[in-house]
Image (cartoon, rainbow, N blue to C red):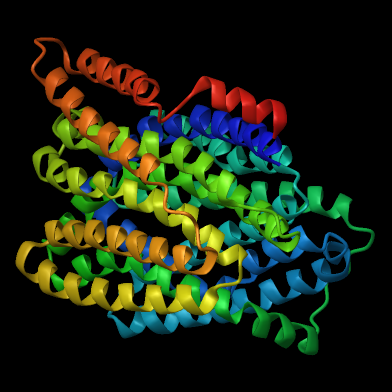
Length: 480
């Protein structure tokens, strides 16, 4: 199981690290620079509002389906037609709720139009995720890896043409960006649907009330979890709405600049979690020990998380200055805090996925409920006083809080033996990474050279400390 996991993990990371950095560093930042901080800030706030309400759109079906198909492959043909019908019905309810919420918080005609198109995009995104959950549940990780990058490949090509044509400049520039996303998501959804269709014996679009209520009831714990987790996106909505007109949209744009790279790097952990969920589910069903895989993935994921988190603190202004034309210093300050929280995010994805696979939804929902209350109250207080900086402080604190709580819950359920040697290795490694970053900053070199030296040195330091061992990885590949 470990050997299969490592090979497929390598493929999905290779494809995503090949494609997504090009999109993020070359396309998304170019669009942000073209439309300006205020225009992108409004788009980003609307995007996050539509994301928060996706609980209605998905209702936990994707996570439930991933776990269910992994343990019962034969249910794909039986459930696929009815679940597609249910997803469409939920999408209609979702769009209606978006309209109500948009009017309630005072969106004008222009913002309502943006909200509705973005809402349709969210339907496509979550429909793609549902289709991919079937691929992951069937352990078709290679196919899933390819599907995961189709939309970005298309968007890169389309946006390059649009940027050269100057389409994004002007009042409606951000809308053209959203329309481009719609096209690319639609093509990806159709492609994934055709692939799944070949894995089923029959398909006939239906809506079965009895089946739908049964699925919604079973997925309710997953839906509650997704709702609580999605509130982490409410910060930009609060920034844009709470701060005065002309300030809130710019502050939201600055936050978006700082958050964009965190969002991108978090996708790595998200992709790993998507692969881990069906693997953990199957291992737990057959009562296999998950502890060796937990240790392995913790080493592989937290090592780069520490490098990224600490490195972005030391090189925040250089990185923001490379990407953006405006508000570099302000976004760099937020960027330092947000990227440091990537360490907590990585821990959350590892242990949150394990607890989800185990069906420990009550504990997860209680934990995220507590975190949500802390998150909203802290944002309300700190955004009023510090603006976007207050949201960044809250985000970092919340990620580490949830990471600690999930570690405690997992330890209580699985009775893992406390690995003091591994903990000490992580501490020594982190101290070394801080020292390496401090040392490279004193070098009288162009910052990119210093940054490259830092990354290579931190990689070597992982082998020196024993955090990563070629021998142990080869042994896992041979006997896993």
